[in-house]
Amino acid sequence: MAAMLPAHATMRMGVNTHFEQGWPLTALNKVQAAGADGIRDSVMWGKVEQRPGVYDFSDNNSGFMNRICARSIPVLVMVPPRNKLYDGGMLPASEAGRRAFANYIVALAAHFPCIVGVEIGNEINTPSRLWPAPPQKFPAYVALLKEVRRALDAAGSRVALVGGSSIGVDVPFHERMFAAGELALVDAIAVHPYIDRPERLPEQIERLKQAMAHHGATKPIWCTEFGNYYKTPEAAPPHALKVMTIMSAAHVSRAYWYALLDEPWFRNMGLYAGDAPKPALATFRAVQQQLLSAGDARRIDVGDPLSFIYRFGDGPYVMWGTSRSLRLPAGARAFDARGNRIDLPEALGPEPVIIDAPAGYRPG
Image 1 (spheres, rainbow, N blue to C red):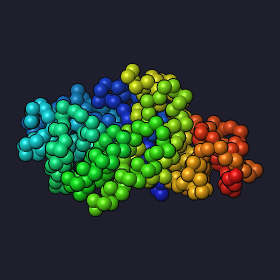
Image 2 (image 1 turned 90 degrees about the vertical axis):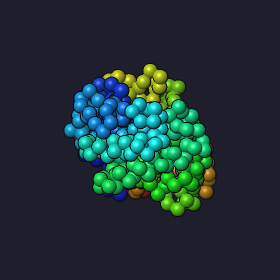
Image 3 (image 1 turned 180 degrees about the vertical axis):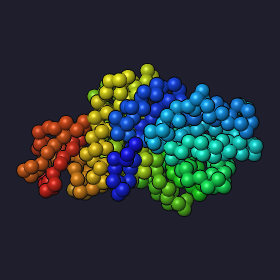
Image 4 (image 1 turned 30 degrees about the horizontal axis):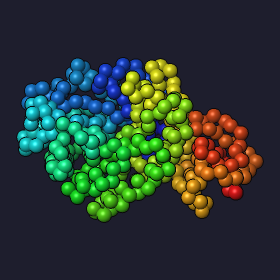
């Protein structure tokens, strides 16, 4: 799949899928129709390695990956470190279990050339039977990362190792991981910024970067899930546009919308409901085609902390905030969060708008 973004744009935006859970492979057409620059899915360790050291990448276990790689769709694979052959199906705590998991990651990356990254675990800041309770969780997880890092380096693999997956931008959690030695081992840090008020997100991401710098290395941030639990389909576009804009301005490297399809337990989060496009799809496409194609977003300081004005490269603006008058030049065009043409606004408001004004604008 040809990338839609120029070389100078930082953020690549993909979607979460569940082909490993049996989604129909015809949904791959929707991945490409949405303009997604990759997907995030899983290939379960326990399915592939059912006998020690023997990997079965047949159609029954991971055949969907062959179809994805045949379309050259980049894949971030999230792998829970769980296999009943080792350590009772819990987080590998033995040397043999950690080595077996690392060997599986190397085999997985070698077998499927479309894999660009491997995310170890999912939302590990939440309680789970898989993980030991704090404080043991942090050194145990880092010990596993250390073995995976060693194995990937020994194999000469260029697949990115993504660690620390957290629901929310949980800075105290990540600080404990950093203190345990995580940063020296990973290529990126994963967060899931599900947030009701996107305006709080810039400070959260900045605090995470400061925590990394304090521990000696600032690694790329991958938002491996983002979106929100929307009450209605129409609530998704304005919220999504704000979050995508803020992530771009924060130089997030990769971001994966959750999810490609609506699910019974997560309604109104999909880009599609079955074959029917949802309102969020128009926003996803508009950001890819109209905004990120112009470059990274940057916030423009107008001396008002409640005015959120961003510009993508030298191209369009995204604006929202408290009521503040705007003067737009002749020839300017305005679009709503779905990319639909609207009348030029005379003032900022709570709903974000896309403004194409090459000659600039004047705030009141």
